Length: 389
Image (cartoon, rainbow, N blue to C red; front, side, top):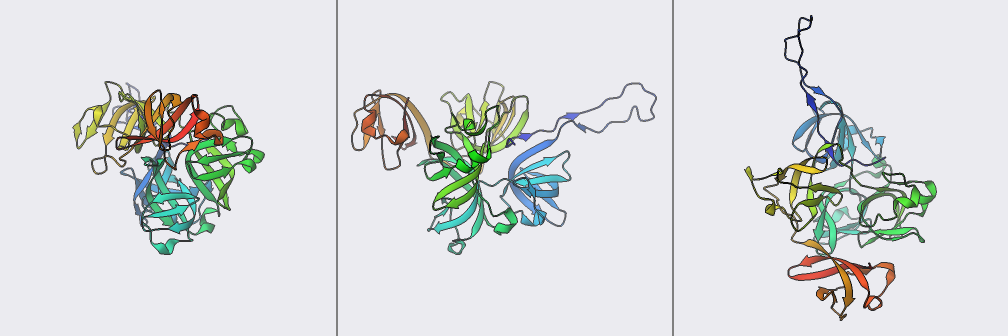
């Protein structure tokens, strides 16, 4: 099943009546909702008395709650503010709430300002007493000093039996090794997908099957579920999390994770791509502003049609959550030192976080054409991944 992280807007059709014989022919007709509503966002508030939650500023009455396509008996009692959820409904009443966390697992370590779950270190201050507990983490992708990471929205202690005793992890796929049937999520967690491949539990949104779904999927956002074993995530399900907005009018909140130099295209949440044209309206603090306000790290709400942004609203309280942005360079790699190299004469720094595809050494790439991805820290361009182009 393809994951949907776009909110399909309600089409409202006002049905006017001509001169018919009915008594109500001239009476105003109520709007007709022409297609189901799908909403993705975080819970703002919960009203258990009225069985209602507010998501993206809109209230909804809850009919049932599910996780991993299975209903949860305790329903709304399991929901918490800042949980990432998906709502499915024909109207704003009787919605089905699907809980969509970024991670589910056991906290293995807590320091003053970080914690570790499923092998991923997250910047977030937690109570040390949560060490060893099962938690559900909701987050958004954000560019960090180490590359694409996570902005944690909430960490909620859970009873593992309520959620099927399953580990879950989302992130950007890197370092695919088809022979070993492994890849990494980000630069930290090694995922073994051999069981998922054997069970046929690798899903994508086109005609490819099994491991073919992962071919050319490098840098795409993926979701895996299974079990952590000895520091390795043993996945029994793998899903490429891509969204196709063609033919849809959509609304989605999130963080800009990439934007081109002339600010005509951007990527939201590492997986939703939109274009900007001269008709796009950009609003900040109740005023229309120029697209120059948009940057990697901007927290926005976008309304789009067929992938073209119609309106963009910059969040006034948290308009930029990242001091970093990514870069990409292609060319001949030369001038290798202990701390840097050049690509077509452009200096790029290196540190202990660098990843080279196929386990090659930097010296092996001297004189070859490469593709380098990294992050800009101050005035320094620091490599995070290198591969032969």
